Image 1 (tube, rainbow, N blue to C red):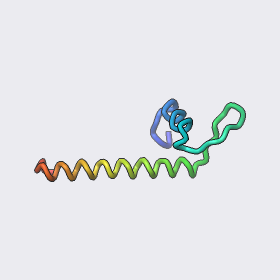
Image 2: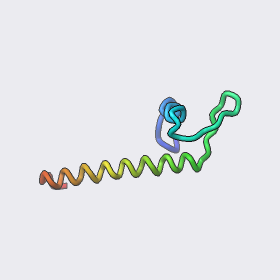
Image 3: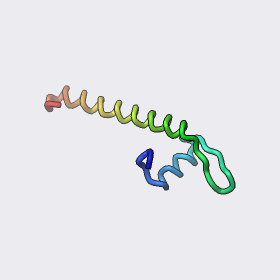
Image 4: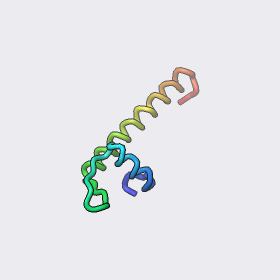
Length: 64
């Protein structure tokens, strides 16, 4: 819920190593600080993409 992603998506990014984790038995454990860092990175990427799109729209004279 915190990241706004589905559980299968979260498991996938954890298994790919995008978010550090450790296992306790069969359970994956994540530190909240790692979730904050991942969210910060994603928000930065989203903001950069949005700015690029806005820049293109301005160059094309679309009124944005």
